[in-house]
Image (cartoon, rainbow, N blue to C red):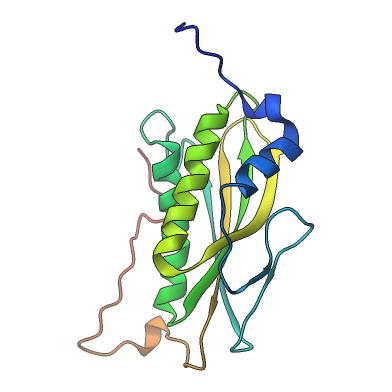
Length: 176
């Protein structure tokens, strides 16, 4: 061992983890109530909300020994935010359900949080809330929200030449 003291998420406890995450997440203009309460509140000027969700499980969709927390956070946010954009909406926020082993390093959690934040930043969205729980491996449930801004939603079945519709067939079955 290198003599370095490693703080784990188990050391922080649930409220410490939530506070650590929340302090790293600036909130955008559509956020009325962000992380730290029982639920988040996001403004939807259009009156319609576009929503999508994905579940990522350690060992099936990513490996912590091959990918950094930062890369995993960016990937998890990007795949949801891109679904919102594909529907023609402006992403407004994501909500993250996070299962973590107690022995996960708090620094890894910081990197994961920074990855979420930086990917959201690219499209003007915020991490507005979520939930954390102890788990044997890392599990991420990410839900993204978007606003249509008065536009009609885009649909895959509405694509016409020369439109391009992309889908990764292995999106939900990616293995490393």
